[in-house]
Amino acid sequence: MSSTAAPFPARMELTGDGLVLRDWTEQDLAAMPELFDHPDIAYWTPIVSPFDEKAARVRLDRARQLRAEGTTILLAITTDGGAPLGEVMLRRAPEGTEIGYAVGPAHRGQGLAARAVRRMAAYAFEELGVERVILEVEAENASSVAVAAKTGFRLLDVPLIHGQEKGRPFVLQTWGLDRP
Image (cartoon, rainbow, N blue to C red; front, side, top):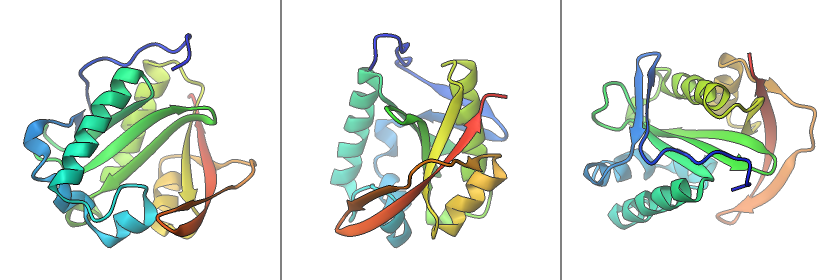
């Protein structure tokens, strides 16, 4: 974390747009494999696959560590503060303040990703004072491109990001949303 970045709160809950974005808890460990152990999540995200109870424990512990370091926030997406339906992330990185998300397969088609991205972007603008948030998306990931467009992000004229994850090459576009 840079010396100018404010620390993240130890506990978080963001509400709005019909969602409660909240900290992951020990009680969520059993639900996480159902959300994250899916071919789409394995293909489009860096989330480990297969995703089992051991992976859930590692992810929860890592989420807590990254928050304490002041680099990343991982919150469960819920509609009422109860059962997790997915995850939204905010990460401070050299290339900018990045938002990411994953929605469990049984909960797609409800606008959860777009609403979670909007709420996390509002947090970044209002509480962290950032001027721009970004999404890094593969152009072939039609669902994520749709979320970017639906939430007002625009494709930025910056170099593509080339990499490899899980033995597969990828190319990411960067989408940006400026402070209103």
